[in-house]
Image (cartoon, rainbow, N blue to C red; front, side, top):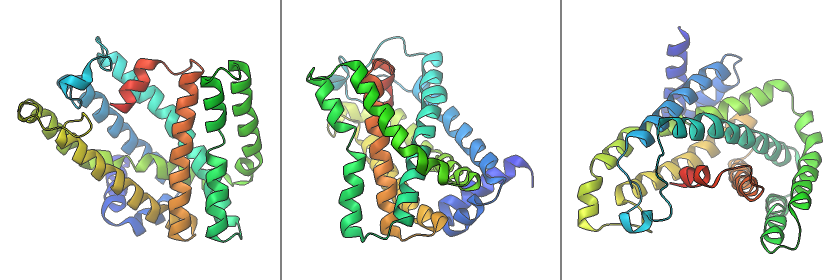
Length: 272
């Protein structure tokens, strides 16, 4: 089987045979196949956002002050190929750490969930204090450094093979975007018509809103099932590990922006 054929076979198994897909993620070559899936998804994201009509997916009334002019091909390559890759790596680290905690902990879910949510929300306090000018940028950055240092022992305890599998899992979930890409493109083509009808949900194009909700639930459902199979722990624990990792990633993104490391226009582009 060629490398490209292996990548498409992995994507097919992940989307339609997740148990088999989880088993394949343990194979050594799965990481390289998942990289190809990720590369295709990034190319699709870049082309979609470059070619779509503005202000899609926002309705015109919501676009003012959000849509920045001059968002060309280079801009979207920077957003998805660079920042998207950085944040995928961040999600991989959080997911590996939370998965280790949930798989090894003997605490019941009734205690483990609030404890883990408390850990995930720890970055929220310095964000609020920084926004209120109670602490400075240096103290804010130091908080994150201490938090990441506290995670380091758990990160080091995971074997290299398991990290490869977790990274392959994160990258291969982009197969969902590839599967829904035709519907996103159709929504962009129909945008002028739906905008004329005056339909919108929280300022978003209705077609885009529906596809986005489908993508969210598909990602959480499929991700939970596959992560539980991959890490060999219960599905409720897998769901919490995945959800808390995504929450931690979002707080990390907010922190990068607050520290001036993530440009405002890139943050907006990631949101819309």
